Amino acid sequence: MGTLLLLAGGAVVIRGSPSADTQQADARFSTPEKPLAFYISALRLGDKVGVAACFEPPATDFYLPAPLIVDRWVVKKRTAYGRKEVSRWNSKGIILPAVEGDVELQVEESTYGKTLMLSYNVRLAGGTWRIVAHSGGDQP
Image (cartoon, rainbow, N blue to C red; front, side):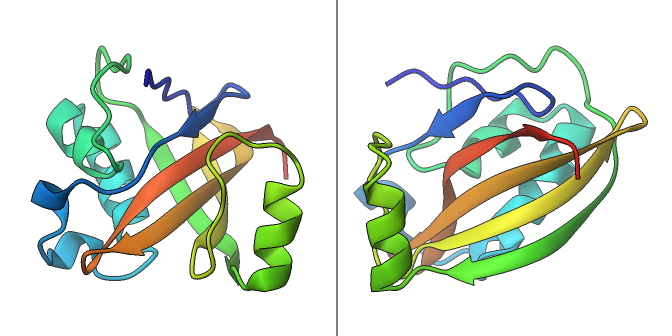
């Protein structure tokens, strides 16, 4: 499945289930917020391998020609998905179904002087959290 990572657009990134070789415990992905912190750090460095590692399965076909300036980011809301949240998400017909235990992070990011609200869904599998869905583009 293809991937489009676009911070300032209105794109949605959907990723699949974790593969066996990426399920080893890794401190960079030990909490729901840590893959997001590592992802933004990798964007700032222009580190394509680092960006890819934040997604499950790892993203491979995204456009990152140079480091991306993320001035600041703040998690504004954190929602752990229970039965109600899973039902709401899945009723929208989004391709990757949510599962109980997923965590949605609503994040305010400032990039090149523009502030946007972005949403990251992360999932725990095999002892690590990875980004499985990403969307955004709305101003706070």
